[in-house]
Image (tube, rainbow, N blue to C red; front, side, top):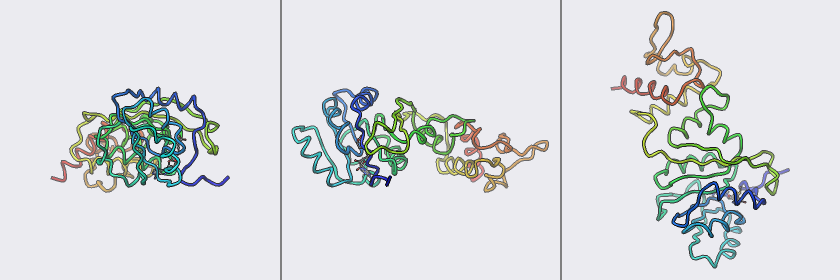
Length: 261
Ligand code: SAM
């Protein structure tokens, strides 16, 4: 089957829609942001629960239908635009995000939301199961990688619901999962320079099967040979990136940054 344009696999199971809203924990003093309302299955439920709902939808045909369906709701604000380009600092209030994200852009939209995280109390989104496996992965597991470190550096992550592909129309090839991200108000670890931190993280996972000494060659001049073992900031570089915790990446990058001074 041809992929639906713009990731338009609509949720058709009302029970799952209600469960998502329940798990998101919407209260009537909360402003909510929905990305990709589609035909409005979540929108209809959110409008009854939230103080206000701002929805961002790219498809002009869907926007016309949504405007008509929800014209009775004064607390509904629809913005026809691309969620990948929208400047979320234009939002009038801090929001909770609740969305069933389009697969093709889910990771990019999520990264953009994290960039604007101060505008969100929490972010409950449905996306591909495989992506959620990576978002929640812990060190030493197959799915742990730079995306896991990025998300967990900025947010508390909680996996909420598994959703079968049968719950959508048209039916996608893969299952979905719902995850709740709560932006951290204080950092998990002390990082002296974010650019260096993420450069080290990305380099460490560049070739997943390679040892750190082969992935971190950019900083090879800082390697230390201690009794035949190559180390950097006390970390054994015979290890692979997937065994390092966020704290370990902070130790490495803070050391590298201190050598730049
Ligand atoms: N929320 C609906 C549901 O649960 O049935 C629809 C979800 S569907 C997976 C994704 C929705 O995102 C579609 O309505 C699609 O038109 C919209 N969409 C796709 N790309 C978008 C983008 N870049 N910006 C905003 N909306 C987008």
